[in-house]
Image (tube, rainbow, N blue to C red):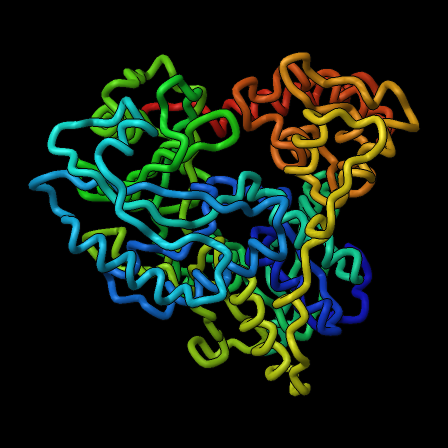
Length: 529
């Protein structure tokens, strides 16, 4: 085991959106930071989300006005700080006769939504739209009792994995140590105080110690899994629910705006969201007990979503044969006793184990949502400074763009199609990717004739974006593996480029391809419960 080094100020466990945001905020305020992630940046719940940056319209139903206010204002920040990743999206809510949510109820909620948004928004307000307007935009929609509906604004993050990544990259570039494939296996303690952790490098098998003045458990849905290494008696903070989505191809006559409606079966929120050249359809909200790793797409949830899609868009005639793939993840919600999972708060809880469990040196982050990750990090780092008995500096992330959030210029030699594609992923870093293609013509070639992605993206991920495995690149750096090909047509070529960059031999290259195929099947295949 490595010789212990000088403790860092802050050790963060978890490379999901909350963990990387805490690391970024902390290091930018002057703290020394190490982050440990057992898999890859953004590989868990962040990747499995509905891919929305939203205020949480339905949270108004449960009286969570503060959460909606916070979410709407953070949505506005992200539209400005990550304009390449977070884009405005218009949603439509159809109103039907003799259904639970009437025009006055939805209209009142949307009016509150606009009021809580405030005057500084760049997004248009809600409005009523006619039945004829619905049918023009979505000819396949159910017309049985359709009266018209409402249109309102929120936002979408097409690549939530890259939102995580850019936070991690900025933290790294400011001096934080970001270690992926490092799994926490135990805690280091001095009496009742946590002073660090033990971790295993999953690539090498090496065991290491990491010492810190304060440790943050930001493992998301895996918070209890981590706490179990400390004391099983306190490892019961989470009460996550499983959410599943289906990916469908777009069809002529499909909606150009997102559709949001209560599910006919049980009233859960049901979305049909245009996403890239597809529809992202979801979601379920099923209580999930035990290890989040066991969450997989199930036949029953698939049937539920197909039935709801048939209710809403009967003219589209989507069937199980049209499903490109499924994806399931666990929301990191607090432990609860509600019969209705959707009623569980989406607010985050900063659990101080000193006050609650008489264990010093450790905080756990319970709950939270993608939209409010930055404000959560700001609150956590403020607490960290107070616990370290230091003056609290101002928070720089309120107005600081993410690394790709600067002005975007089209590089020489980059055609319009490729530029549109790359800039939606890399933003102002697009020129850096294209520079690699200019240096090496082989890297300018497409990885798959069906896709616009080029070899330079692979090399760039390895050299600049903490990518060590094929699934890192295809699933979370480029999004190639999240489209209809699932990356299969690009895997061999991408693996060859990674082999050149990392010195893999033929056996290692072939193993990476095999591991990738296994990972995609594990993530995307629907199976019996």
